[in-house]
Length: 159
Image (cartoon, rainbow, N blue to C red; front, side, top):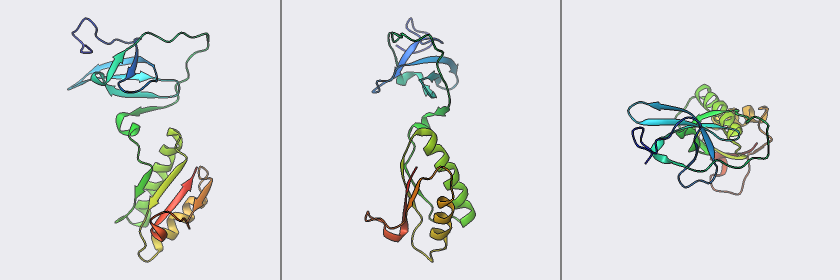
């Protein structure tokens, strides 16, 4: 059981893993709201997740005395990050703002290949997005002529 009232309740400092995953983390915080959630620190990330998705495990044996590095705090929604973004119906300003946030998040989460769906239309949005991405410091390469589906309505990125 992982509920707060049970004998096996999860507490700060417990070693856990998300069901179906192999990475072991440590609970840094437990918060009871409508559903009890825990913030779990993994090597480079903290994730806030419902406790019913966690299982308690034995702590990993470590030969290192160095402190853990925690660089990023993300939620369950970020764990389900989509490597493609659809800009249909957005103005150029809205699309560029959305792409900027999306590329930053992709980089933080370690994604290297991304797909921007902007459509064919007049080409104004496609041109603005590609120009913006070519100057972006996190983007290694903009692939605007790709043999994959989407043709001119899609831009591919390598971070």
